[in-house]
Amino acid sequence: MSLTSERVPRSLDSPKQPAPRKSLAASTVGQLLEWFEWSAYAVFAPFIAQVMFNPANPVSALLSTLAVFAVGFLVRPLGGVVFGAIADRRGRKFVLVTTMLSMAAASVMIGFMPTYEAIGVWASVGLLVARMIQGFAHGGESATANSYVAEIAPRHRRGQWGSIVFVAIFGGSIIAYTLGGAITNLLDETQVLEWGWRIPFLMGAGLAIIALYMRRGMAESVVHQEAEGLDDTQSFGDTEQAQNFSQPGDVPSPVAATGRSSQFKAIVLIVAMIAGITSAHYTWSSYVSTYAIVEQGMAPSSAYWATVAAQVIALISLPFWGRLSDKVGRKPVLYFFGIGMIVAQFPLMAMITDQGWTLFIAAALALLIVSASGALLSCVMSEVFPTKFRTRNIGLAYSLSVAVFGGSAPYLNQLAQSVEMPWLSSVYIVVLCLVTVVAIRKLPETRGIDLNSVR
Image (cartoon, rainbow, N blue to C red; front, side, top):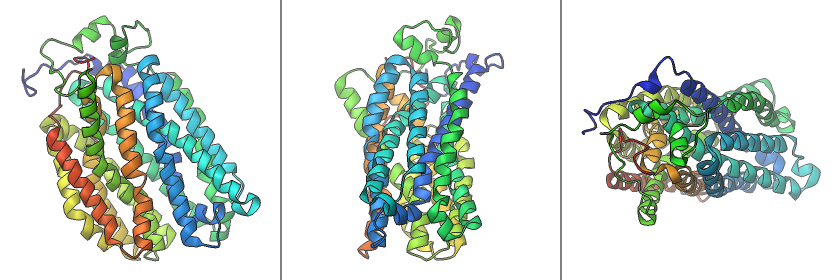
């Protein structure tokens, strides 16, 4: 049966079944908080560099701060594999609660960490340890959230529901940049350096209590329960719904298979697909404000507010990109990102000056292109891996690609500036987007497949 004519189950979309939407909200709030805590580090990087590293060499201090940012990403694959394996065995809910608590604990560490002036190099070491804890937990959170949201979504709206994962990514960043703009407006630079930069980390840890309460009420996905052969009253739906969700005529996954060679091929393709997406995302959501402040002399508050406004526009577009992929397929939308970013990267970066409006226009256009691909990550990754290994494989592929190509992007961008070869940073993005386009071409169209068809 073709994708366009297949019969679509409506049971999970019924008003009598509010549980999936309630759990989607709980998952999203938790992700929003975790991404806020994660993004706060990038937002306040220029200030953290001055208080947590040797201030005698500002360039070295900033590079060291960005290097710690990258190290947090490097431990993400380990967290993705470890927590992913746990999620595939014990369920998605357990991991989502555990990772949130770990992120909150690391934020408390950063919020109360003594400065370089107080304890010397141990301040830098403590910051590194806290970021490694965050990275480990974040790898598991990202993998599990991507699996969970795709598994609880109605099959014909999986792209739209899956886009919520990236809404949380942008949303957490927006909150962090909004707070950054407010703090730099209300406090002078001395106050920000003394204590203002600690506010988002301590605030995030406090808000984790609310997110924890919501996540404890989440239900396990019926897709995971069926794959494990479990009978749990906290899973979505009953036996009739499970049968409806796996009707005869559903489209099986053309990629996912339990064989090692098939899984390895799928992991490699997903790593390659994400390479361009994550490098572009972290360049335009995390690095450009630092670039505008340090290299172009833009006022910090102007850079923060311009970045916030651009990310709001991109966030609003995400569900529309997801819904479009539910109608026309995943690959056309992904091709739009790859080709669009290749064409736009150089002129958009060249547009940025010391004026806030230049950063806003450049970042808004770039992030609109990025959002086309980001909206689809949850559904595409879930559609190419079998349920039995889905979270573990997503944890490895997603976290590895983000760590290598995304977490390193701010550091490599700043390094290119420091050696007076700024064009190298854009070359890096363009080359990785070409890799993404090749991977998209190799991947099959997965819109509308049944996640239960391959285990």
